[in-house]
Image (cartoon, rainbow, N blue to C red; front, side, top):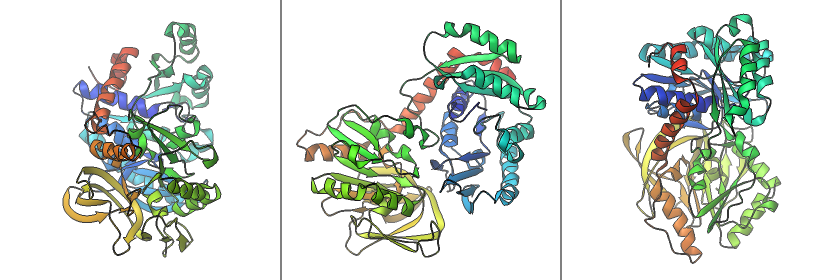
Length: 494
């Protein structure tokens, strides 16, 4: 558990998962309830939080629905879509908690029990802060789960934000005595500098709380692992790096699966910017409209913010545009929602940059896909999470051909491409993870600018990058914590 959101719980669980897996322990992650618009698709369909998919990979496992049986996907400041066992069930407002707990809790218990029966060790991640006193009566993710599992607890606190001693002592003071008895250790996360400067503070923590400090984890620079949600984008300063290819991603209010673009952040000849105000945007080669949980609402915001005018000016100047999922839907002529799946607006006018329209249907598609880009034949892999279906106009050019869906042969055309190839869109997330496709996309822009394409220059496949990062993470954890003591707390002999 953490003393607050963004303390580093997800990364610590991934590090522990990798460390235990390398020690030969059969280990799996679990988070009963996640709140995020950044999700992943499991084999066979169904979505879970991106963090649990990342943790599963760290443990050497394919992600399953049991690892995150409940996912809340925010749609407004007060409402969210409830996803249980990978499938959307209903829209929840502030007054719908009784129905939510009635439907969610049995699935949470069943998922945990299946994992506990299959694995030696289940690493459970809580949510938010461990002492959220205003939420105690409806907790199904922190202490209720610790009690269900009979689990010891380790508290994680982020020193980078300041106030770490108050956060840890305050958390211990605010929880009930029975909960305090479960807390077997504390971890301080994201420390910068000489750890010896903390010695007196660590002694104070142990004397004041009676709970051992199990380690101080350093801040890890350039960790290439997906974040749980887009919260970090709010704190990112505009990218200062100058590169031959400049890419801008519109930071929509309900942006989802922004991890689609993390591979572009690490390309040597590309600089990636997340942008909210078109007036402050640098000169861009590529403008990307990302996925969103609320397509029509974010389309309206995009227009009000001036991005429609900026996009038109960008295209007149020879720029490139790409749309992913909700951003792709915005680029069509119309968005129809006859059943009120996403909003109460039955029809909206799109940006009209690609020759198709979107029709929302009641059933959401969640699937892993494989295929290739039609124009180049380059292989792609990714996943779908969408209720809106693209209906291309006769003669419009598809972007991709899907050849497999959830491991089974399935032929289908997907996405759309403008006649000049400067505007592309697709429902497929994770497209830029595919090294060949990503390199060709950037090289097309380089060539249009009169630059030599990099061609066969090394371009990492981000599935391989992830594996190396998990090992790096585990090495840091083992070097800076009492890992044997953590294992002993978990009842594991290393």
